[in-house]
Image 1: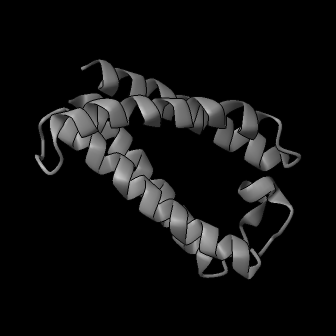
Image 2 (image 1 turned 90 degrees about the vertical axis):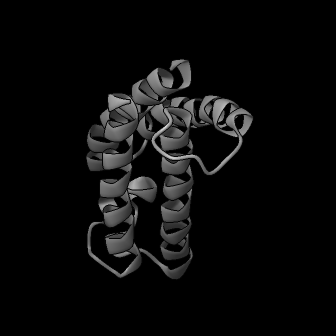
Length: 123
């Protein structure tokens, strides 16, 4: 249960970050390849989509550990393995970013999300 809560807290923080990006905050060097200080419209939309994805992941994690009950067990069971794969794939993608701020910030964050996802999936 602590892993699911930690995962949810980190995702909430990332959602705030993505919302700031979507609203035009000049912190784009930490996301989406770091090529834009302020994101263009298409990447702002991508940030909004990310918020929805984070919410779905949080629901799956909290459901998996029994803190909520909104999806069938098989959905949260399989879903958390898909989430783990998503974060594991994100590790090298962030690690090869041309943006040093993104590489040095997001790679450890995604690695932590992958570890927490594994713990939730195994629970």
